[in-house]
Image (cartoon, rainbow, N blue to C red; front, side, top):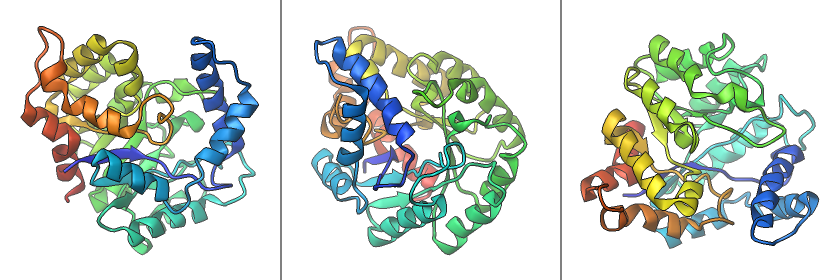
Length: 310
């Protein structure tokens, strides 16, 4: 079984426009290196249109093409930081839950909540107990640290319900702020919630994985996903293999989960190609770096099955 632990669904008005323009700024910079010139507004508006998939039709087709059996939907609550999005976050969460209910063998929905909301605990309770959502997604770059006091009531609820929490780690495009999502802030969650599965999205980022290893060696409830590592695999495949092998060797293969961050990286690498890149590691890794078929099977799905109790 292949499980994508990190995907997103967007509909018109589900996210503030600033989010798409921030990603567009990054994409136009990368494309300009190869001679492709586009404006941030042009790319950003194009992303809003291209990402419009409120019924998950594009995601489900992409899963079929890539051989992905299940995907975890992660709503991102930026409404508190950037007020004014057309569809309130409570409704966005409910729409994600309904998609999971419509495709119970294919999609699983986490709740996306900014812990600074006055009704954060109530909304989380509604998401889990009324709508059947199976985890929590936090995006600290919206302006909070994952270990600050407002977050802990949500983590206590997740502990009580025995469901995982997935937290963005590493850098993030403007207007979001990377200082809030540095790996070291997760260390407190390992100390204060040792039985709570905490998944660090992006494994600390492609430049933060070494500090991620440092935290994981002592805080055994911290896991990682490798979404966004497509860029590392494209830019420097030997470095990608070495980094992944280091995480396996020092933190344990059983704590690494496959993720794509779809649709954000489709323009760089398709999900079928990303899945195949991971599958081919036992055969394509450079000399001196070895992956077993058992390790790859665990990363692609076995570990997520255990964490999600599937």
